[in-house]
Image 1 (spheres, rainbow, N blue to C red):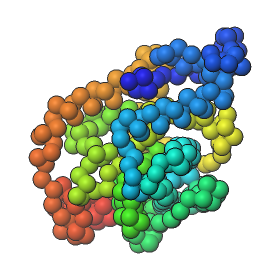
Image 2 (tube, rainbow, N blue to C red; image 1 turned 180 degrees about the horizontal axis):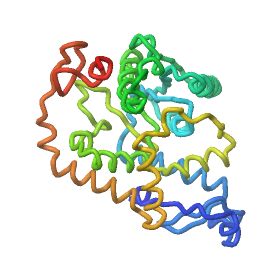
Image 3 (cartoon, helix red, strand yellow; image 1 turned 180 degrees about the vertical axis):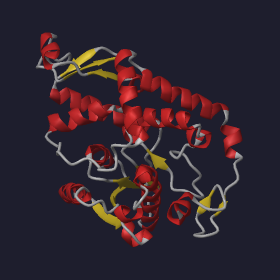
Amino acid sequence: MYWQKERMNFGSSRSLMADEGCSLCGKPPVARLIDPERRLCAEHFVEDCAARVKAGIMEAGLLAPGDRIAVGLSGGKDSTLLLILLHGIVSSCTGVHLIAITVDEGIAGYREETVAAAVDLTTRLGIEHRIVSFSDLFGADLDVLLSDREAEACTVCGVLRRRALAVAAAEMGATHIATGHNLDDEAQSVLMNVLRGDLSKLLLDTSEGLPDCFIPRIKPLSVLSEKEITTYLLVSGAYTDLPECPYAGGALRGEVRGMLADLEFRYPGTRWRLIRSRDQVRNLLAEEVSQGVLQRCVRCGEVSSGELCSVCRVLGR
């Protein structure tokens, strides 16, 4: 499909200005996109991104009357754009309700600003908003939980954030959880799971999931690259400069991110090819994956693939 083959070339301002104007109106372009080739001004670039996200949602049938979509709103750029776009799309959908959930991990000097940004955005859009904290759910902030184990920061945080979001979404009666994962995030996850040899995570599709056990997750921004998201927010005046998580620097994802950015620059389409390869493997092994046995965690009673769920394993250590 057209929106699945989208790629973007963010050259220097000189190279953009040297080109002709916007392919649709002749105004100065802010970005040049390929497949299909076109240059777009700020207004038409914003419309193009929104149209691709909406097309992906509608073609996949992700919204239906009676749905209650819980948006995981960290306050950062990805989740900010996700909420803005979904708010516009849902406003024209009958019987679809939008709510927002912010998980406060308790990271000193970082979370305060992003939580404030999330509160400001939901207030302006008039969206129901709930904040849940690690300290309330797990008995301690992330800073405390990472004492003497900072190298595991992203693993610990990711496991607990998913549980916190799921718990809050269930309590708010959500039928789906929408997260701000973009094209880069998805491609990075594929490569990380391959490098780790983690076949189960490579094959697990939480966007469909098992409705009887988990609230299905959707990723509407997976059709947009990180640069497209940043550019959208900049040209629309919605960009807010926020601090980066202090634990992010040493994560494997950071190295994979740089590697994929270089490969994408030299071999355009690398990200999409990774994602397509993953989907092909999932389709081939769909029956085998569906036969996996789920059970209840002996400690907390949540659904788990083993005797202990990932949350209890993390907290137990």
